[in-house]
Image 1: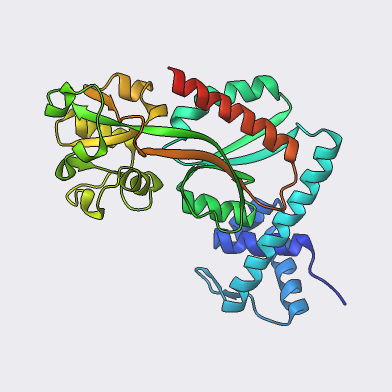
Image 2: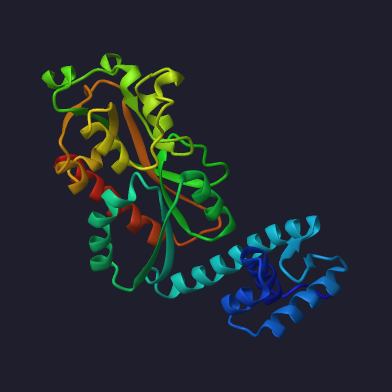
Length: 304
């Protein structure tokens, strides 16, 4: 029985992702005729139509979507197999693709990347920033190897390891009545003034849950897509917000005209930071070194 080749599966997924034969051919480093012939061979082999071809665009048939999803899984396992063999020869070398959420990457990566490059000079890091749900999907389909996320978050059937806890701080306008307190309790926060990130950002749910705030805590008149926007809104006197501890010594926060107050240490106002990876990803030595590097960077953030 003839089986599809990895190259045919690669051609199919590339066309579906690019929605264009020419761009897919460039992505696969082949001519368009070679790519088209490869997909036609795959359709003949499976005896089903995978794509609908028109003059203007490429459409995927329902069975084509299912085949493409399984093709991504097969290609991911194939990549893992190569990585495993390379890691056996030199465990701390080669390429590793890491995804990081936006409320971690600008604050933690500048501290941890120099450490990793110094300790693991043969390790090539490819980085991507995205929201938690999309990063988990990319881990599952093999687009990235590891994701750095904040918990609690549903990691589905993926492996994960928590490396640190991180408290939230309160950012206030300088003349705010709460600025006279050295520390704050979650119940002191005026809900009608609270500014949080928009739906889809896990820190929004973490802040509401950790501070035991009602779902109505999000001001409906404004939803930010970045911490930078939240800080600017607070500096303008338009409300208060919660920020993770790793952000308090960033240039963005240090140069802002705001007041920072910690929440009392016995409160539950904190999140966990950790790594997520596929069960089939076997580069355990690399994962261990990444975990140690990120843990050290988190400990440094907690001291300063």
